[in-house]
Length: 228
Image 1 (cartoon, rainbow, N blue to C red):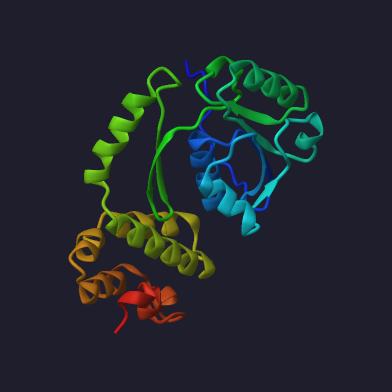
Image 2 (cartoon, rainbow, N blue to C red):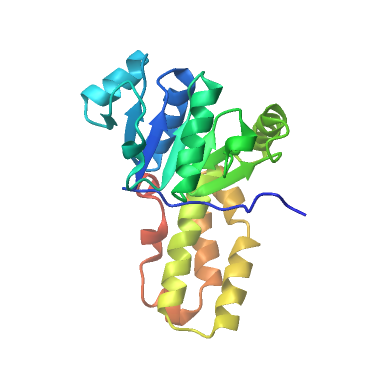
């Protein structure tokens, strides 16, 4: 039985509160910024990088001392101080407001844990040991890096464009499924890894039905940096 429910959360433009100003808090802020979160920071001693983010307006600074009012409107809270009791207090207040909270290295004070993530564009592979061994999760993620290289980022982007084109054609769902499966099982990924874009286009031409091909320019499906 799983303890945690795996989920990918869209936090773009949503308020996230980070309590703490050290290197751990900095790493959390940097990853949250990549997801487009609206970050509010509380911390006594703040790293130079966090100060720079505050100075440029990328992070809102709420001062040195934590105050419960800071949680108003937040959908997620990170407690990343070196004070375990403060982290626990923040966690209790967040839980009371039904706000998702993560207290770093304090699983008992978390309503969610952060997995080790392999990022290849829109392909995200998350590895978790349910908090038992973050070091093992990191090792597994590093092992996966050799299996899923950067070609997968381009591959997933291309598959997304193909899916959009196919769905817009209004074909029956079984036909859509057949097309998607045939493309995924084709040699497109290998061709991408070899930068063989003429082969990629040939495979797409072969796999897509006329009612889809007639509505688009196949070259438009290729990454802009690879055209021509």
